[in-house]
Image (tube, rainbow, N blue to C red; front, side, top):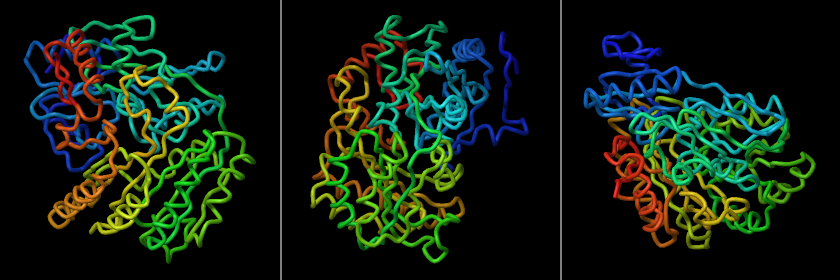
Length: 455
């Protein structure tokens, strides 16, 4: 099989690399595309898109392949695969970086930290830049520097008709607005330009663990603690089991526990003072907060969410951490059947909340906390645990219903959450996104995603 004008690799079902090429992060996803077009640049994307139109093929677009719903791969269609496009070019004087659409956050951190710079990226370094950014972009640095979309300065996009355009505040501003939170609905983003900020090389970072039975007390203290936290302090709460890390005593491995993990985007001495009171609260099981290279912290939890495990997610925004909401979280967090399952809660606010609500398509500006409930099991456990972990996540979400705020983070929606896409944006923003979709993709060519329908 050939594609005119295509210089990358074409992978079909008879290729030895086919099974590896069609696999994505979530091992639940088992789709068989007719063709995987691994692009070498924007011109290859144009050629692959033209081929898909000519042959009336379903189209999926792959960046990092990390979306839990598996939108990066389709059955019996073509995957426009950007995974070979991972270059990062840093302009240290201008404090910007151009990043290709197939890059992972590890690629960005590696290059930017060589210049003492960073931008808001995901909390797992093997997450793709494109998917995380286009959905909004939560990360350790968001309270200080805003979301990934707040640091996006421009993007190169291949549109549904095959044009290569630049989107920024000055060029195609309507498209630029939609890309910052509207997902992959409007074209194939082949490169991103991000603003960079001084950071590191060392930051105060890491988790503190307490026993599961202390969860309610820890969360009440944490609620008051983060209410007064400086913008520099990013934190994520994890409710599950203690991972088997070498710097944690063996007897604690896999014990049910709550962890609060930090990253302080500032001076080490200031960071140590900022987290002191929480580290001293109660009786921690383990405390591994320490000055650490930012790059190392960005990849610290990679091995807790590896490729190939089976994942099922449910998520919601939380109005506030009331005592009743805390009690619900403490009651449900540790009732999963798999020791790999957990819930994670992100603290927003700070710079995220100071961006005008309509400046980007990301809408959760006034949300204090977001929680994602992650059922996780191994492939050989699918028969016994898939139904149980799925039910646990759904029941946990249902129990949180009285405490939910409007909206949900689009990147946390699973394959059975299509009915919640409009909810994630609200009616006004969704209608505006649909208008942009009608302009740049009126035939809904790009629909293998968290789809926004053209008006």
